[in-house]
Length: 140
Image (tube, rainbow, N blue to C red):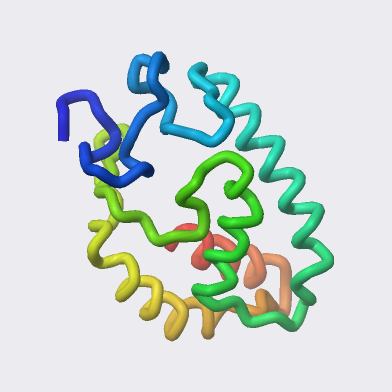
């Protein structure tokens, strides 16, 4: 990985930056080169996806790794060609190294079998238990 880069240099599109972005913006379907602009678009798409997904999953739904990939696709497919696919590049951000790309399919299967099965649907006897379940599922 190049010094100062968040993404490993590979032949994968998800590891490439938008030409003219000074390596600050990932290659995207919209040709956006400015970091603030891509952040606004990602947020707009997240809000759109949330509205779409609210009616998709009921309160009794137990989430799976396929659901997470579907949510990711609905959110980011208008922006990135790689949306819905498991990451193929290793990433760091702010000194934190994310899970190795080669391990993600195995880790997601384990996540589904353990934490998603245990904590979804998100229910509890009180607000504290629900908040705990949401925090565990989101943090992992």
